[in-house]
Image 1: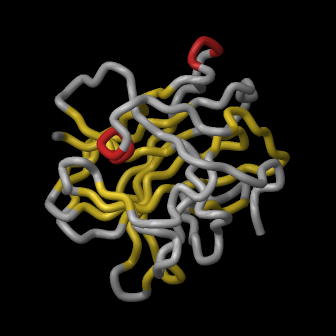
Image 2: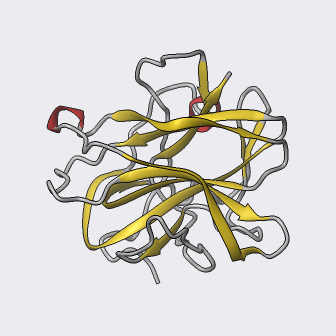
Length: 205
């Protein structure tokens, strides 16, 4: 299964926007020049939770995500938010998962379309080294680039790994459904072409 509105993609992802703290982000660290996803505005008839899988190599305080706002307008009644999902360390991605944080967000403004927007959690999350996580957004409009996760990527400070899609956890993951919030999704088979959906974890530097 794959999001119906999209098929291919390349590389993306650099977070911008004024930080309230000294912050860093995974794609901001891997790709120091701001980039735009190959496809910047797709709409779907279904809602999805989409996620970027990452693993900090040292303890980190994750404060939110950077999200590339698609160029097509989000509907006024959209169920929109962002979250940090922890993978169960015993049963893995097909087992029980839990939201470390899920935060409802105001819909992006029209002026923010086609730009990176920083979405902060209601409270920061302290994450031990080695924790398997997904930075997630709930939306039916999205931007994307394909094959970004064909290989592992590591932030420039060497503290966060974004694993390739050939491991136990799909990267560029998604799950369809209208009732997945606040119930955590299970990304057991939801990935296509190692796609990046413009979702970038942000942590205190």
